[in-house]
Every structure is written in structure tokens, then in C-alpha cells.
Length: 388
Image (cartoon, rainbow, N blue to C red; front, side):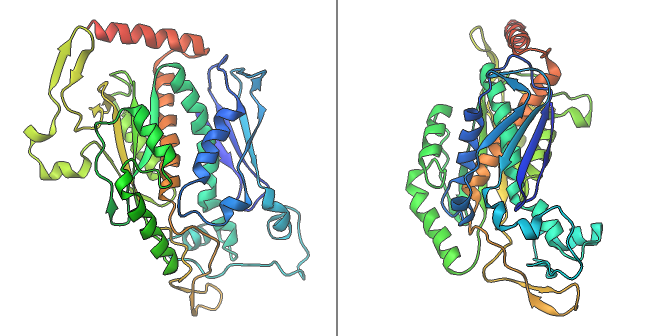
């Protein structure tokens, strides 16, 4: 599969075009809307989430509830565009008409200045409208389609918050993935540790009061992936590498790790690697899952556990200093409407990014013109590796 997204933050709409989805997959807009609504929730979100309610319109590739095998196009309209028509409209304007809200002061931590230098834009709104995290709504829509595919073949996935600022949730390894889904969806901060929820909300409130922002760590748990997905033979076929690259492409993400991740630097090999075991019911399995479900770029059959770290949102109501690209004078950076913390929402985004990569790897490895073919091939593969 592959997908493209198009659209600007305050433009008419976001568009996602997906190619390669098997035919005869039962796909409803409700499957996608559920994910979009989850992305807009979470403590710390700003006023934008109240102005716009993201809902999808499926405009091609699906007929009577089933995919056709042709490209699927998804549209998320921007209901607030009527207030931005003059600023963001596609029609030419007269030279003597002042364009409102022109931005010449790049914000530290954003793509503003780099994008302006690269593309030659004197008005950096031409950069920030596309580089905005608003684009992740279109990516979540693609990931929601991937999740429908995963569900069909017995793979489940959930994202949740591990840390906000300096408030760390205790590990909840004893929970099943169903329990994790329930707790994450019930929590206002999408954390599994109820005892830390209020502390996380207090940290968000304090940052907002200070005109500041905070980041955190999110984790995604994928259950039911068969061993051998991905490949060791080329660098670009290693599935953990693909997942890592996709996670790092999410706005404001600055790090990724699998299993114990960076803590492996503090361990000996005997404390890190997962011993192999076998029984007739499970086939081969690992006694532990320190490596997060991967060895040699391939899945081990254990749950995929991947974490991502999100930096504080760089749009601040107490802005940092910057330099006006027209006057070259020092000014405080422009303020755009923003959240004080988007870590809970980021857990939903990362969940869907990982879902896409896992589903894509499945479709590469197994015949998948129809969803029935895919299910049958994966079933036979699971039986073969269990008897290996």
C-alpha cells in the first residue's frame, strides 16, 4: 500500500488517497471517524478542537460498504474555512490588496524558517499551513483503514501515554491489550496508570498557565503479529526500521525505541536478549520481550512494543525571540492558536502510523488482491511456522 495526503491547516480540506487496499474489505466511514474523534480528544487540546469536528467523506474506492481494489480517496472538510477564504483561497488577488496575517517572523522549533529558505517564501504562512500537525488527521484516516485490515487477520493495536513532562506512569505489563484499550480510551490523558492521571493534568494546567508547553512519551502495543514479518536481507525491508522512520515523521517526535530501547545501554547481554522456548500449542516463543517483538528486522511473534518521545509544542503563548526576515530585527515569534500539550492525541496518531506500517508489511509479504486471499494466506503461514 501507499498513500498521499494533501491540504493545509486552514485550507478547504484534507485529502488522503490510498492505493493497494485489498478488494472486498468491509470499510465504513464510521471505522475512520472513530479514529479521527479519538485524535481530537485528550486533556490539553486547544480551542481548534472545539471549532472543528473531523469527519470523513469517502469519495472513491468503496461501493456499498466494500472496497473495490481501486484507489480510495478520503476527504476531511474544514468547516472553519469560511473564515479563512481571503487568507487561504486559491484565486489570485490584486497586488494592492493586503493579505492579512502575513508571517515574517519564524517561530523557533517549527519548519517556518527552513521551509522559507528552501522554497523561497517571503510569507511563511505558505510553510506553516502544510507543516502543521493538522496534517496528521489525514494520516490517521489512512491508519484507520490499515486497522480494519489488521482486525480481519487477528491483529490488534492500541496506543497510550507513558509520560507527560516529568510525570511517569508505572508499567502496566500485566494488562491484556483489551484492558489497555479500555483504560486508554477512558482516560482523559490516555494513560493506563490511573494514579498518575491527576498529576499529568496538573502539569498540563501549569504549563498552560505559564504560557508554555510540555511533551512526553507514548507507547504502542501490537498483538497477534506472526513471526517473520519484515526481512533481514536489505536495510529498507527491516520492519522495525520502517516503523522507526514513520514514527519519527510525526510532527514533534524526536526519538523512538523498541522494548527496553535505550535502557539496553545499561544492561548486559544476558539481561537483554530474549530466550527462545517452544511448546506444541504456541510453537516458538520468547520467555521475555525486552527487544519489543523484533530481531534482525523481523517480528518474533511476541507483541510489538514501540515508544516515541514528543517534544513540547513549539508554539508558545510566551513566545521565544526570533528574527523578522524582512527587517532582520529581533522580535518575539508569531503566535498561532495551539495546544499546551498534545501528547494524548499523539498516542492516537502514533497508533495509526504503526498500524499502517504493519498492515503494509503484511500486504507485501502475502497475496492480497482480495481480503479473502490475505486471510487465507496468513492462516496457512501461521500454521506452517507453528509446525516448523
